[in-house]
Image 1 (cartoon, rainbow, N blue to C red):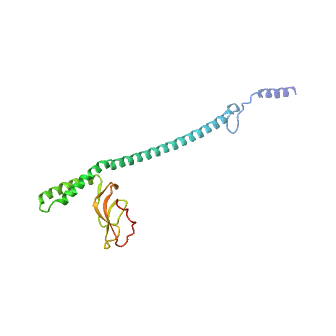
Image 2 (image 1 turned 90 degrees about the horizontal axis):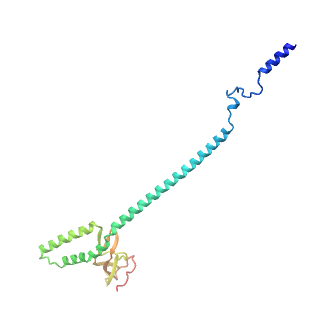
Image 3 (image 1 turned 30 degrees about the horizontal axis):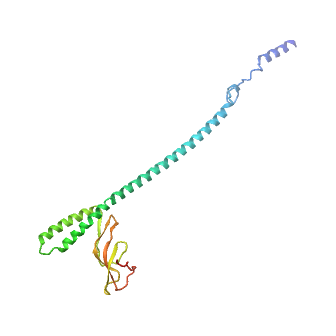
Length: 205
């Protein structure tokens, strides 16, 4: 009896109850390998990743906005530059208009007999007009059309029942520079004929 009790005690002594690092059956890891802070660290890393993603999205949106603002600025600057170059010659063109008018009067005053002189003046006149046209100058010189206060300046009114009312006759050509009015055409306005759809032109001074 005593021997059996001793054997049981020896077997019990071989099992150390203070050692809790026994082997887990499912994972093969011991309890001493488990770190309770690992879960918290993993959660913290996930939060930091979300913050970085949010910051990246914000920076990307800001970059897109800056690119759009720059593109709008570039287009506006290009448009303003084109406008400047289209109309930068306006003052010079205005100063040249009296020269063009005198050319027209010179051609009208030349006799048909002076063919050589007339041919030379016509050639110079054409060259001069071609240069002005190249830079956007165009004449308002059509007679027999309805009065348009946007491009015509009435200086004379004439009664003529045979001509539609408010028809104009050009007295001095007007000019546009790149589709912008540079000088209105001075016109004689015929009234007394059949009424047109336009309003009455202003009285001449």
